[in-house]
Length: 211
Ligand SMILES: N[C@@H](CCC(=O)N[C@@H](CS)C(=O)NCC(=O)O)C(=O)O
Image (cartoon, rainbow, N blue to C red; front, side, top):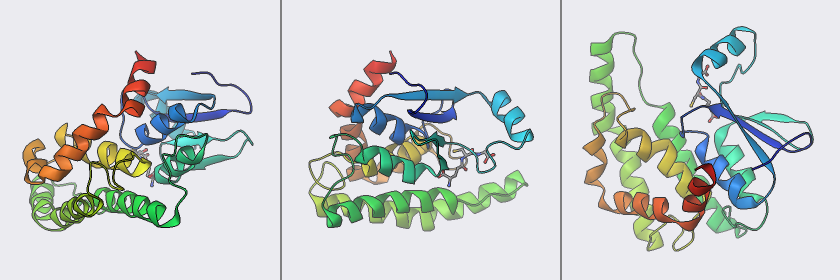
């Protein structure tokens, strides 16, 4: 990986995949030069106190000098660069990718919070049994409809990456408070898709580039 003035720079938290990883993988697959800038929580906290990153991370600096936020938009942009095909050219296939990414954003952003831990636990359990289950069912049906292993069929897209790193990894790593890692096991198709994504050459090549 390389970078510099006039090139792409992605900034996200050090040691975290989450909302940064789909764009990182797509940038790597694009073959374009880019820089992976990471901040630890202390560095982020200081920068935020100074008025930087008002919308949080990730942040992407473009070759034009423009700086943007919004992880899904970045994944989509990165998927269009080069010839990776990670964001499909066909409008209807691209729409399916966008639907997956928007469902995953909804699943995260509608997740209830509460300062009282007992109330948060109750709200999260209700969410897992209700709305989140609905999102998981919808995603599973999309794999059924595509024939798998991925959301648009046999080709990996940024939709698959967003699904894995925003949602599946978040739950299976235990970071989704009060939603247990084994929750995902109720959706066999989603577990299989997650495994197929992890084994895809684009992901393996990216991982190897970090080693
Ligand atoms: N809609 C934004 C949300 C960004 C966001 O909330 N990022 C989190 C980390 S995943 C963050 O930086 N939180 C700390 C903050 O906003 O100060 C996106 O998808 O990029």
